[in-house]
Image 1 (cartoon, rainbow, N blue to C red):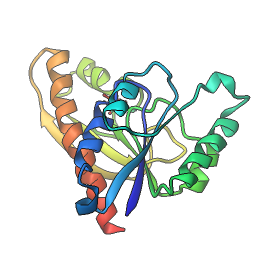
Image 2 (image 1 turned 30 degrees about the vertical axis):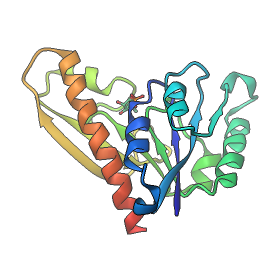
Image 3 (image 1 turned 90 degrees about the vertical axis):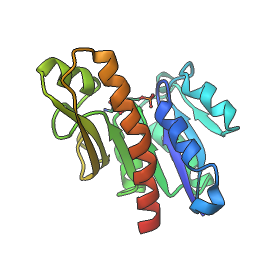
Length: 189
Ligand code: GAR
């Protein structure tokens, strides 16, 4: 059985999509074991309650530096025998402590077709730029923000003028593509 940890800072709709995809953990050979959040008030924690999921919630301000809190996270990852870390709206740069311990085993979802529109507002930035082909990228995490080798992408054309509508379409793609990609990775390894 493979064990996943999901890291999230906000709403957690992608976290929930991953949980739902692995409800039958025996069939999938994989289960979500831990949710990590850097934000004690994040809605993702409400979602985690529905799944009785163990969580590790930390406040970075309570630590001297990134190395210290990442060591704390790492202890939990080891305790839960985590094979793969899935970042799902985790709005922090992963530091050397986690990158070295989980090299090649940390993935991220980004709501744009990388390498375009990196950063926190991928959908809005692409919309403001006026592009007509939008999409979602799943990639390995490296030292560079929203960098790292691309694993999967899915594109849609959008000619409308509602950012909200576009966001809905992008999130629909995310909720399909992320679990699908995790399943492929798990089976491949
Ligand atoms: C998602 O759209 C994800 O792609 C994005 O944060 C959102 C989290 O939503 N991540 C990034 O922008 C990473 N640069 P969620 O909390 O509802 O899953």
